Image 1 (tube, rainbow over the protein chains, first blue to last red):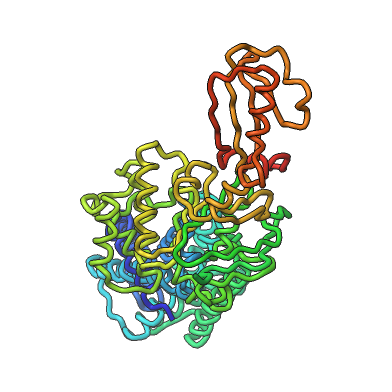
Image 2 (image 1 turned 45 degrees about the horizontal axis):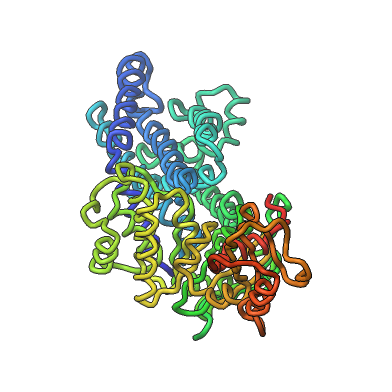
Length: 253
Length: 310
């Protein structure tokens, strides 16, 4: 095991994040604050409580998920796409490091960044609404697993992408809709019957629901399913990455 | 000397169907400088990619320092430093960070002293905190070398180290390579500049169309294949070649003022005495005589003539 390689990639990626502090931290915090102002304060004041929780507080877990998922994907995909783009990927391919170690370096770094952003947003949320987290340990478990699994997915996107447009394509066309339709701003029980059923095919529903349960003790689907869903998603991503590295798809001639 | 890199029956066929390497055999000895000379598209970079791990191997084996580069890739790759042809650097990173990064990737910690030594020897120490994008082209190339040396490799691959580099920097690169060899590093460089191979290498391999045409000690190669020319300057221009000397390879040039005789200096007899005697008997007056040695370039052109360069 070449732990130094993992550490080298991790440190390198983190220093990149700190160098681009504004993009990395300030912009997600700003956009989340806007959501709080619009949905929490302006519209939320006209919406009744959702299952005993004020609407402003209700959207906090969903908002954190929204940001953490998009950030994980964009951080990890950019992290591996950029070396491909400038050609410096040659040293990753010629290094005495396994693909697992390379993935670990990039994914841990991307996940750390989005975890930090998630926690910053949580702190920001305290400025707008009263929050009382019922299961803080589970909250962290869901948050960390979400960061890791979507960083894995981002890593795949970065390897798959052959230009900058494609890098944006998956987050915009696939992930964004799934997140918005995944109960970020509402409980899926608020949907008419058919749509509630359809929503159950959206994996993000399970993540948001489980995460929301850790905050307020209530959920759309049972917590067990949420945990299974996130483990299943992580396993799928890992299996796909394993396949990429066995075949050298899009990285090795 | 023993082989530090040993390539056996190596073939590489790209997905598009291009057969870039055809059954290549190559033994690289420890401590030597081997120049791989070949036209564009000959397979030089592919060969390096297959040895270093950027390209998968279609058939054959590569052994580096006794370790198979697929089965035992960690040990094999740890011995190798690679300087790519293109300047593949992340523009916003500092020199120090990028060099440290490579060292870490190759599984080595710390090494501040070694990195400082490498950066100083490449005149990069003063630039260590400068972003790559602010460096000149020559400096970027040296950063690539510093990265490749950061983990103290035993074998260094330089893929066209002086492509698009000015004369001054090229000379500098040559002395860098000489210095590396003095430290016991084995250097394999690819080039299509013959003078470069001639100036730096101990042995020269000629690669063309995905095949190694020959690998020979440089001096021996020049001796073996190098023909000499004897140019005889005549006092009076001759209208035609001397009569009755058809068995002697002679050419008349410079409007009849020069006779050129091509011969093999390694042969049993050079035939020079016979030629000069023959000329005297026929009444030719010789004003001056000089010899010219054919260069590596002539050898190279001979060997790769008629090759498909695509």
